Length: 429
Ligand SMILES: Nc1ncnc2c1ncn2[C@@H]1O[C@H](COP(=O)(O)OP(=O)(O)O)[C@@H](O)[C@H]1O
Ligand SMILES: [Mg+2]
Image (cartoon, rainbow, N blue to C red; front, side, top):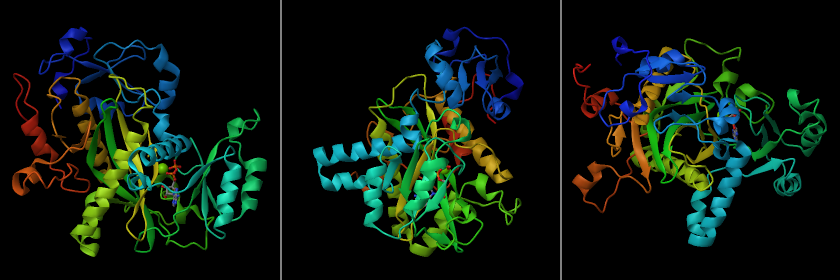
């Protein structure tokens, strides 16, 4: 951060391209988060049509991307058809297709590595096959979720087909759609009835993955993240109580028991330490490997579908739920993970995350592009798996260790100081 070195003039593009060359300013377009972003990098805020770095929401993207001419150096925080992974119905469609392809080309065992998403149907289009599946396991619990909403909105649990029939009659239209006689799509998904509980409470994980390219696939995993707890003890007897079943902070903070001082989060490090103390190093290592597998497979499932574009990058927020057997389940992938902070600790995490994202996007040309680690981000996939150097040096190349460190120490300041050479004339901070 160089707050004393803000410029307002727009530099000529060519002065911003060379590696290590000093840029005079990056023009930032961003509706929210302006000040957080502006203090993370060396930027000037700009009017709507004139930007170098655009932290836009998906609505802006939909309306403007196709009409925007983008110069070589500009960067934007979504891929054009990001929804192939971040809309609940399309994510499942792509995962099912990928699993089928794997089964055909590499066999059942390989395909079974995609069995990390709960059985899901899109309604109303797959209503009939859903009913067949529903009848096969009487008494089980299902969850209905609108495909494109977030923060727990429009979600309900059910055990009887009657609830779906009532929903079909009048519940399947969102407020905006009621006049237009359009039906909003939902997914009906098997509810994970045996979540892993801590102090009797359900939680899920929020993990950040940054993709800078789809062809070749280049993905980095952030070391920090958190577990989001529900405030109320878990029970299957109260399926209508959202405070028991939905772990979204937006839901939990409206609960009468919510204590804003305590919040409802644990840092990922705290969770990893807790699980290690309880289940041992090996078990937790296996769990985190399975979580890595979820990131990679889900990204590979859309690799050929997402329109690759050198201007685009995407910071995904993964929702992962653990069950009692410590099996991780993919619940959804968010295109615009919330960067609103619920506590000072949370603010610091999100600030670090944004700062490191900007280091990787590297508008200022300070990286070589070959780094395996930048701040809290570790390169986990670069057209193939990435391994740590430690494993190679100490254990021999036969023992390859994945270069992922979710929930491990995030000594990013030290690493960044070594990595990022100061600009000429600038003192190290
Ligand atoms: N299949 C499921 N089994 C158990 N809990 C679920 C399931 N799907 C969602 N949930 C719970 O509901 C919350 C919201 O679901 P999610 O799919 O993330 O929708 P939203 O986009 O509204 O956040 C999750 O964070 C999780 O706590
Ligand atoms: Mg969610």
